[in-house]
Length: 195
Image 1 (cartoon, rainbow, N blue to C red):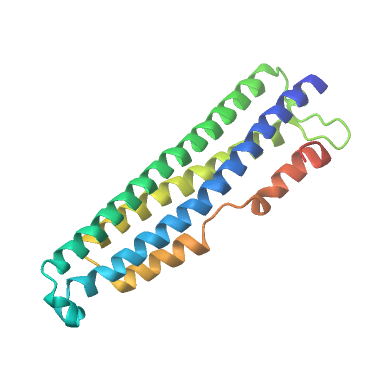
Image 2 (tube, rainbow, N blue to C red):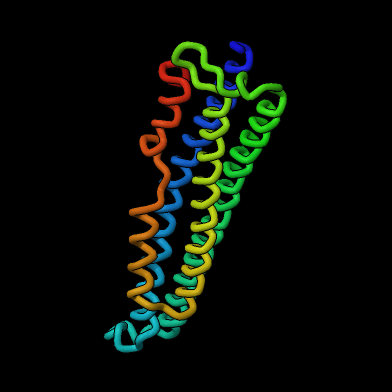
């Protein structure tokens, strides 16, 4: 049974690594979202000829400035799409860990073995439940991030300050998955072993 628990510990160590990667990606995601939001908020003023005052005498400044901002927005949105691919890679890793955990569970012949505990160590069923929960949380967040990027792209074409503010709250407040929010999974599964 100890050998089986060690296999689970390896899976959770990999899950911990992926969560650290996710958290680092989240920081960049929020920063790029802020940058894109700022550009979108400026677009209305940039397209208003009255915003240029004395600068209107500079030929082509309105078009040049608008083009520069649109290029910056396109670059930022592309970076966010690249971030999404990395988030997707994390989700796929969690899915693989869960699938491998299911295979380990199937290798155990009896229900008694699946629910057997060695001291304070978790049973196999607890381990699979923890991996499944981590996968589901990250998959849900990934899908939400895809929706946010899609909505942000639409707002670039037709800005709506209220919608932009609502998206900002969503990105900054929740459902960011931070290590401390799911640390209890690791605490329950491995106590001091995973740290």
